[in-house]
Amino acid sequence: MSNFDQSFESTRLAMLAQQHPEIVKVKGKIVFNAEEDEDRLSGTSWKLEEDIFDKITESDFKLHIIELLDNFIQYRGQHNELPKKEGVIHFGDGNLDIEWLPNGSIKL
Image 1 (tube, rainbow, N blue to C red):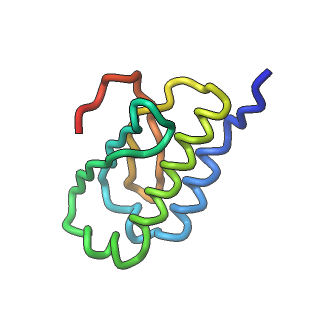
Image 2 (cartoon, one colour):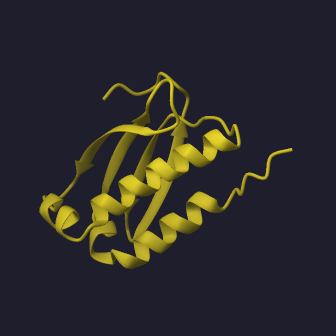
């Protein structure tokens, strides 16, 4: 029996959104995928409606979201929760949401 916590991801994303309200009010998305043979983040692609990438990097938001994604992928792997390799983080209006996609859906 798995002890996968269904609120693990949403709770941590909500906490990150509270830390970076100026960034998550901008509409955007982060497409990500994991190593095929390992439960580790391998790549991201960012799409933003405003040019705030410098602010994202300077504020450590980028570092925090990448660490979270890697943690989410590892956590899903530990609990054999599928899907676990690909997805999209959507943000805007002060929120961060994650959408997991079936393997093979994303090409970065």
